Image (cartoon, rainbow, N blue to C red; front, side, top):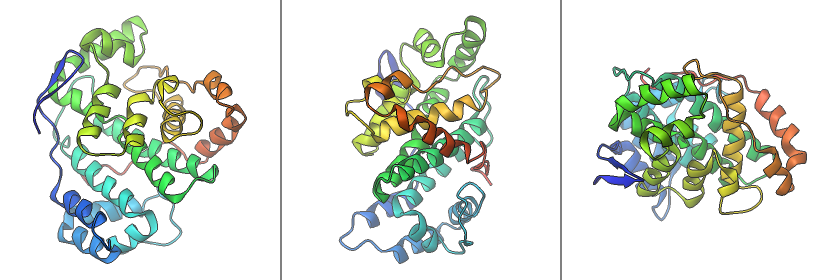
Length: 282
């Protein structure tokens, strides 16, 4: 992919799509997408297949039956969810032997998995369709991908951002804007748009810290990810920095959704943070 600009940033290095992801994408858009073919695609990449099965069988998904084959995983979770896992393993796995001061990919991996799960469960408790639940999961998984892109292209900025947050008490977005002139949310949304993700997923990435800027009103995938992200941040501290992310309850009230807050919070609390701590390189 060519370089792209976000604000004053010039991004030159982008993750490449893994071959298995491209094949899954082709299968998904074929005239007759087949769960069997999805399983065959994954089985050709034995390492990826093992990673997917290991995570799907972990406490993170909480499935009642043990999943023995990739096709079974695709049938239970949906082809899009499996496809997103393949891409996530590939992108996060690239950080296996790397170290950037101020950046913690292992924490980001667990956070992304937790937010994905919470978003899917919130969509489920609201009685939304399986496709919206799947999309909420995908949006939760990739809502912070901009952090990976910034760390890859501007590693020296991570330490500066981390230091400013600790010393001045600024939020992450405020510190990113001060150091870079752009945020991880903007960068990630741009990349997801380039990759062809749906508008809902792109919007969720762009506005997970700013629900009042979401283009659509009412309960949306973007609002669900905002809530799930804030819930997970409230349960953990990243790099020793006290999280400042909170659910915008005033906005929920304006949208007529404040009464659902306690239900969503309880849904999130039913899943302990770190339930998906299986690392991408295992």
